[in-house]
Length: 405
Ligand code: HEM
Image (cartoon, rainbow, N blue to C red; front, side):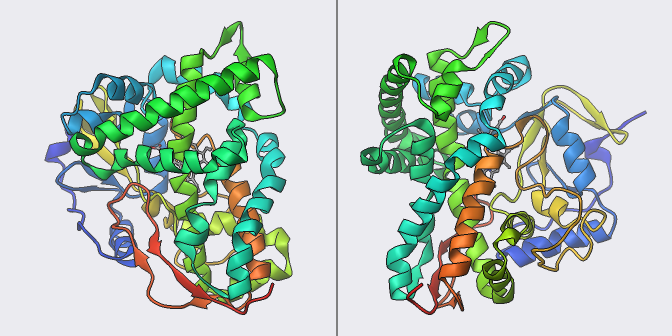
């Protein structure tokens, strides 16, 4: 007979660590004591790789992202309609259908198609920085990097990069925790994006190209196709899921390379190490620290019953430092061969749809940084977002290096 989770004797998770090392330490302490679950005032943190994976693969645990409006009592009809259609918030057959239809468009091949463009964008951003030999890397490189790539993916021309940047900034206010204040700006940006994308989709229907939008229009499974409305939702989700993640992950990487210049030099000497370096950076200092699910029905796991609406927080940091999967987990080694994938792209049905794209974006940027920024080092204090932010990384990263490359 299963025990109710509320009655289980388990440790409390220490809350509000101020640094990522403190956060990691708190998780390592639990893992080393054999605790796979810990209590917080809002729900339960899942600390270990196998448990986090098992729970994320069980689709009775629903994504909590669709609850943002409910939790803040915000009921703008357009906002609610769009939130419900965000792929990250969908569940069950509705979600499976969308993944089946769009999945084939997000292959390694579609990421490869964009690779030369990615290299061009990162090098263009690095040109002025490398001429100077110093930068505030977050605002000068990380912030602008992903927007042209999402635009290219969707087929929006260069003159609209600025527009997309502005719309992304406004739409990101969703995560600022004050929908009553920010709602009208968010909805206006979503309206503008929808009008823009509707015209682009109509154009692609008549003149197909070799791009993702054309692939999505053509996507079909047994006679089923995406509606225009579904494509609009997907474009909105891609902007939300693919922009801030990539820019924060890149900033985390550069902060880490400033602390481990030897590892960056190895990439300069041998660029074929870049893919392994991306995996290790994402394991060691992931821009997404954890995710959240709630029980859609009573769920029994490891003889514990979780009643409906119980929240769990699978810790991606805990999973990435689980020594059953990663030997000497606190060592940063870009040539690590663990055979286990890191968890920073999540796991299960909501596993990152843009993982191949994100990997290619980071690989191209690592190669450019390694060759063009020799002797990279900090040039002042790195400032970080609060660890409670859903997408985390430095807010300011002053760097210095020998110019002219
Ligand atoms: C380094 C950069 C990235 C990281 C760390 C990242 C991480 C993640 C994670 C952890 C999830 C699952 C969230 C959960 O289960 O609660 C996710 C989902 C998703 N990601 Fe990414 N992501 C990145 C880049 C991208 C890019 C570039 C795109 C697309 C252009 C993208 C599109 C998506 C989408 C559409 C989903 C939702 C999938 C679904 O719900 O079925 N991501 N991502």
